[in-house]
Image 1 (tube, rainbow, N blue to C red):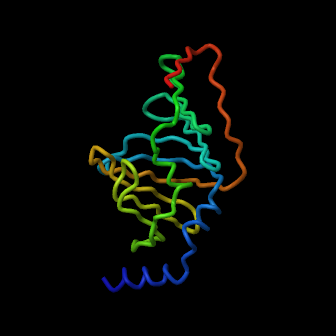
Image 2 (cartoon, rainbow, N blue to C red):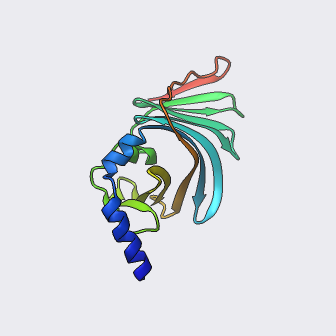
Length: 173
């Protein structure tokens, strides 16, 4: 217990604000692993820049998900179709640009947590060496989720999406 308190106070003294950390991580690419209730569900690659992102090479399903401004595109390579819809819900990656109510929390790394964020509860963003290392939360179905970030690279990445011309395009506005 004393060890955790010591780590917490050291992190508190050295802590950057969440706003500073996320501004420093405004554009990145990484490999992600998604767990639900401690079981690995999928892995993918993400490119993120100022609220827009592309998640690609999603395994085990063969999809690409892109959020560009206020639109979401779900490309299904098995069915050769792209579904487009308006971003009318808060996606978990929105927390990387909507962080005003988070508070510094105790953990082995540097953590900022929030009890409730739209359809999510017990939300925490963990940092290691000023880089996002994990986002954990409980979803609306009370399933515990963890998104882990590996091979994290900061940089200026262009985020754009063009659906394949041979795919069916379905607009669900």
